[in-house]
Amino acid sequence: MKICVYGAGAIGGHLAGRLARGGAEVSLVARGAHLAAIQANGLTVQAHDGTHHSRPRASADPRDLGPQDAVIVTVKAPALPDVAAGIAPLLGPATAVAFVMNGIPWWYFLGQDGPHRDMRLPAVDPGGALESAIGLERTIGGVVYSASEVIAPGVVHSEHGNIRVILGEPDGRISDRAKAISAALEAGGMPSPVTPEIRLEVWAKLLGNLANGPLCVLTRRGVRDSFADPLLREAGRRSALEAQAIAASLGVALPDAHIERVSQSNMMHKPSILQDLELGRPMEIDGLFEMPLHLARLTGTPTPQLDLLVALAKQTARAAGLYPEIA
Ligand SMILES: NC(=O)C1=CN([C@@H]2O[C@H](COP(=O)(O)OP(=O)(O)OC[C@H]3O[C@@H](n4cnc5c(N)ncnc54)[C@H](OP(=O)(O)O)[C@@H]3O)[C@@H](O)[C@H]2O)C=CC1
Ligand SMILES: CC(C)(CO)C(=O)C(=O)O
Image (cartoon, rainbow, N blue to C red; front, top):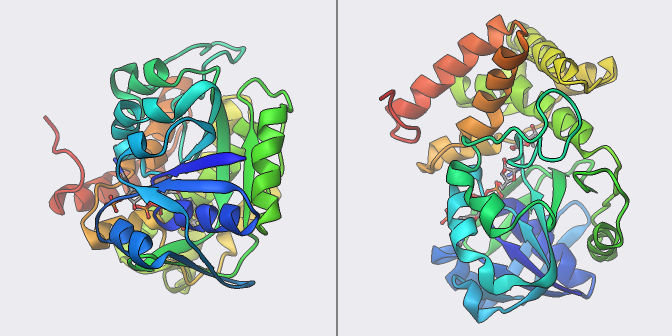
């Protein structure tokens, strides 16, 4: 299977390494020193099951890579407009595009029954660029569990954990194309269930991002160090409860076990949004923090703690020049 990973940093690098290990014809779009290192020395993934080395085709320019069976998009949300502008050369008539990222995805309400059917989300798809360039028909949703970091150009480190990539069609069908991507990932050692309920999985993951993300941005420490303070662990639990209430207001019922799971977390890992702050990269505030709160306001769900923590995290991001100032 011919698969291109678009934005092969921490997560995309891990997935590209897994796909190569499983025998897929994998290529990747990356840039800068990371790309130069991959082109010169190959891609190294340090994971719980060993260190994997591969030599995927790599370029900053999708035109070098040509049409694919599938594209897996793993950029940070602020880079999505670049993907919309650049992806055309990778698309053949039947190319599927899986968005394997955190946060509320741009396609969330498209084709979904309910009061918000077909509502567009300009904060995560400015100007509808992704919808125009890719469209709902090609789109597969994705959720990834893999605490990862680019620790040196060309080298991705993944903290031991219950890694997986959950894939799901926005309309809930279990499609052959999702199963094919899943099989390619699993062949390389990445568990990859295909679910009929991808929106539930989006929220299950977001629960964790909202529980630890704003707090870790404020403490500037990883999850374990932040949650070492019982008061902050309890604050994380309350954020998760508020996120659970937003999901419920949209008809997504997350079991209480998820609250316990995220508030018991002892990950050393620094959430990727904190990695961005530390490295001076645009932060995924809108998809991960702001969009869920927008949906809370839309459904009249009170989120007093998240309102405060996200406002503080946004100030931190603004002060670092990594999130737009209030106009
Ligand atoms: N890291 C983690 O542990 C986890 C992350 N996630 C989610 O996964 C997604 C990806 O995160 P992560 O892998 O950490 O992000 P990274 O920043 O590590 O990876 C994204 C990569 O895409 C590259 N990129 C962006 N735009 C372009 C472009 N136009 N052309 C070529 N390359 C481009 C970036 O390059 P550059 O660095 O130069 O910008 C970077 O190497 C996010 O939604 C994140 O929230 C989910 C679970 C865990
Ligand atoms: C922290 C983690 C692994 C889960 O909340 C994550 O999704 C991230 O780093 O962005």
